[in-house]
Image (spheres, rainbow, N blue to C red):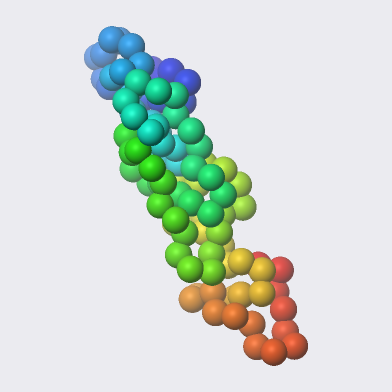
Amino acid sequence: DTYNGQETPTNSSEGIQNCTCNPGSYAASPGVACTLCPIGQHQQSTGQSQCTQCPENRTTQSLGAANDTFCDCIPGHAGATCAPCPANEYTPG
């Protein structure tokens, strides 16, 4: 079962205080509604109180990234390490 983006533990219906946030979201404290991870952050685990920042020179394209594979190079950076583009070259990200 879910409640406002949160999953209730199996065989439990004791209310929101027993819910956990899905990957891609977090709750600052137990019993409050889940919030999607902001752009530039991700969360791959359930029941977390914060999201994780994408690696340097990477960001997400939308809210609620469930893991770091959603972290793409920022504009002007490319390659496996999202290194800055050489002089006079550009990539939109």
